[in-house]
Image (cartoon, rainbow over all chains, first blue to last red; front, side, top):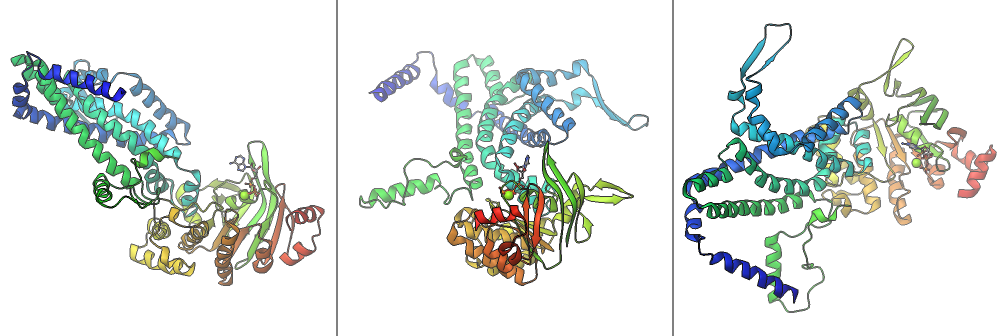
Length: 300
Length: 250
Ligand SMILES: Nc1ncnc2c1ncn2[C@@H]1O[C@H](COP(=O)(O)OP(=O)(O)OP(=O)(O)O)[C@@H](O)[C@H]1O
Ligand SMILES: [Mg+2]
């Protein structure tokens, strides 16, 4: 009954949208594959990939620092997380973008030596760079917490066994702890990536010509505001859908050794479904357990 | 091979080891027994510097563990040096601690490749031999959770042996096993002792201690209460505390 009601409401909304008098669906179709939009998609993807790369690498470093026995190291890490998690990412992007107004030059040098290098801030921090930095540094703070949760989820006996074999602290982390922490790290990281794909639209404030900026630029020229918002949404939805599938396979890969048998891929599950569909009713108990067996949902 | 002199260790205000003196000769199998909380595991972990000792001296194969002596001061060694020393000492844990994301074979070759920088081929060849020796040639490509407890513990022994250690430490290697699986692990250890491996074994398997052990140490309250030939200690204990303990476990 509830299902019928929900479907009815959805159908109603869809119908209203589809027949809205001033909504030009042909414009949506027209702009969907426009070159400017497609270029915007490429930039959105680059921005997302780079920001996540910074976020993951820096986040892992910050997480390991956070767990360091050295109090100085761990408090630096704590401050990093405190600062970047405590300020809006929009403001951070804005900050990097406008840094040149207060700091026209940045330089590196070794004190008391003539060795010195400097460059105008504007040439270093172009809009794309500002957005990447803003998104990446912010992401690192969140990733650090995710990675830390992953690391402490690995039983201490693992570290001891590895140390007893003579592995150095770094080796233990890289070969034993982090791979196992992955099982806990991957699902939220997938969420972060999907979220980043959408958050990257904030690069708008730095005038980075990514998908949303592009769609708004076109809209400001022709006033098809809603149509272009729909175009952007369709693409965002398409990209996040692909990422969701990618996440599933990644989880499956890092789940090896934690489940006795790997869960079937969607394709395998589909095939089995067809098979059991054709095969006579008495279903063998070991085939096709109903419901998804997502490794991420089986943390211990 | 192992020499402990007045080894002390505290956790906060709890003094767990209160002056341990003992010596393990090369090729000797020393078994340790004692009530829960008496410090057996802690002592074993001090031997490969998983725990730092607070006072006393502890050396393995003539070298201090975790420290360097300069003048009459002890300096703690850097991580790298400690790791090198640890790589000469094998350790087997009560709860196996196999790496669950690696197959049996990968578990065994990991340290030789990463720590000893052996080539994969060399490490794998030795690993196959070792797994064969512990009776698991069929299970090389199984993940730990596809193995029984006894099989996991045998892989863990093979993993420790792959580093070609001079000394093997066993911390209650059979306590987490179902009774019918205890035998297969003890058999492997018996073989190892027969080959002349120096071993320190914390165990509650009195039969094993009596048959395989060259010496038996009874620990209680962070000190060694009694030490001697296993047969003597087990059948004719000199100390009241040993007698009380044995009457409970035998
Ligand atoms: N990391 C630690 N921090 C604080 N206390 C500890 C720590 N490890 C061990 N202890 C304490 O030290 C004492 C000795 O522990 P240990 O594990 O050496 O005993 P054991 O003889 O091995 O006992 P069992 O037979 O139960 O394994 C115990 O009281 C324990 O609570
Ligand atoms: Mg113990």
